[in-house]
Image: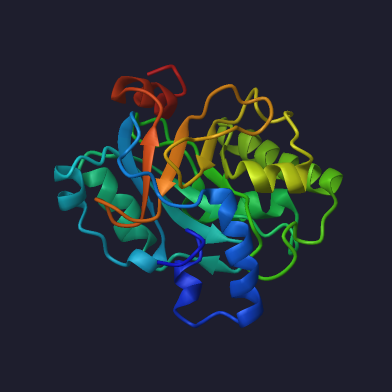
Length: 250
């Protein structure tokens, strides 16, 4: 396991001492340790290229009912296992969606939304596809906030989610931590009314949420456990998750 749930793929090639030190400091924002037992809610998981080919039948039999799958990063990376993971989760009956790892220091939010949609990040009204997720968190390559001011970060996120909404009709889920969100956006509440929150915190309590979100939709509570990849719960029942997948109209 690595300190950051999204850095397993990069861990294959090793990390510099400076980066490891930075990560060790920032990991406290995820919580000191995983929760001892799964929080209440519908169990699910998220995976990336690090997990390779996933045994979806086993994950389903062990109770997973949804999955988020990494599709893209910036405008330069696509998950080589995306098809197996995205289609495999769907085929066993899970409600699934895809996520994009943001690189606000490379291109605009709108450009990255377009890249995401072009490489698996779209949405279909089939009752089993979640809105795409924007993974916006600690920078594994440099400055925590990617060299952006809080105002510029807010603008970048708005550029991404607005383009995604314009093209798909859905508001993207936002994955983040309260610490990063506070540091890099000024704890803005401007996205809380539209974008579902996927909070990352490795603790027995979800803790304080970013401003404006009274409740979370998804909680990533551990980087290891019953299912391959990260362990998550949906804050509700399967029927309510289906409502989110359908955008409330199917």
